[in-house]
Image (spheres, rainbow, N blue to C red):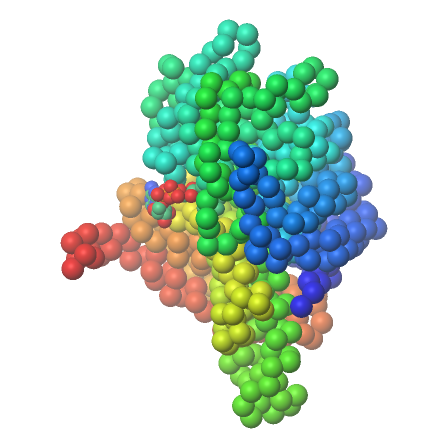
Length: 567
Ligand SMILES: Cc1cc2nc3c(=O)[nH]c(=O)nc-3n(C[C@H](O)[C@H](O)[C@H](O)COP(=O)(O)OP(=O)(O)OC[C@H]3O[C@@H](n4cnc5c(N)ncnc54)[C@H](O)[C@@H]3O)c2cc1C
């Protein structure tokens, strides 16, 4: 089943849901005209359909492997990577001063969605580089910026992020990698990092690692961590990669999925690195990359959901089983129709949230307004967690639609599920995203949440005249969400908040999805309206149960002892 990029869906979300007109109206993004936007989406779609999608299976069947200490990538990945680099898709949103296109993150998000659907394992490589470019733009010295960013944008070099160590996963502050001052403006980096995505390859001239490490006087925890740029080959002043650095790929992991993406154990043995950002300010600098990657990983989930949906739809249109009526295919059965509708409606909701988040990031960049920054920060964990949870749910439903054939590898349905599963784990597990939402992102007393909920209520009020039933359901869900948000912000004991963090994030995403579907009912065709009705009448009511879960707090949950669980 060939992948068809959903260009019309992106256009619709940009025009009617995400607020892209405001982005395009700013001086900074004035080049993002409708013609330019169409050209970008259409060109990216062509590359994803024709070049990347045919590589997906090869990545799964022929994983990246280690050969004499060098990573050999899956068949066709080098050519696929070159197409991405030559198309300029890596540096779409990077600063034009360094060779980037300076386009809105909303467009990068749409392109990342298409690339993820086409070949997730390969797309993870440029996604890491995009995040690194942004981190260097904001935190690196002029010398480092000038030397590295143009090569990263052109794709000659690529970037990685190195946080995780065996004892430091979600708790990054527990890391032990050391940095010592060489006295010549460089540092010696020593330690082991694990699970490093795309730590090496056989198609770029250099690999640039952003590594978190601790200086000798760095205090314990995250406050004593600094960030270093550690290249595989040390470049000369003209950017020619020279001497090999003292680092190596020790091994590659055998994984459930995402086989085409090498996941490495890395050993740094006094490797030469350059500090990025201030001493002990590494976490703040790395957060620039992590926030970029969080939206990017949410978008990976959405892209895979799209691919899985298209596969399942084609199968359901073809497979004959039982007295189905109509075309005689299983798509005529109510339960199969239910599964496909759920897949399509949730993918639309998750994509709308990612686009809203990207537009908020763009507005923050264009206006430097604290309100836009707060909105972007609030939406980021929701976009990450709901996008990836949706990817997993939709890919799992995709297997179900296929029946037994879904469990048989040759249909490709199972690969989507295996590949996407990690997206809820890496870049901060979805549990950690939800805790961030209810703690740090509500530290403003719930102001950013309130403004979003008010916008949803206003949208519902405006829709009452034409879509009374749907508008009332969205309005009521938003009202309930505000009440629970008030309850949460009143809880000083963080355990009270954390115990319901995941259902709160899910409820917020559901309500945002209702808002987007209501807009689709108003501005879209009759098919959009029918899908919106399905979402608002059948999926949105989940909010009631989710919010009830949140408001139970922590007492009964934590009363269940570890012994109870082990009994
Ligand atoms: C394929 C793959 C690629 C990866 N790529 C990279 C990469 O490029 N760079 C990199 O640095 N890392 C990478 N990672 C690592 C990834 O980010 C971590 O696996 C992730 O952050 C979770 O850490 P952990 O595996 O140690 O799990 P743990 O932190 O041990 O978590 C286990 C469980 O406990 C929960 N948990 C942990 N702490 C808390 C808490 N305080 N409160 C509530 N729940 C908690 C988690 O949510 C999770 O459910 C990758 C991982 C994989 C599998």
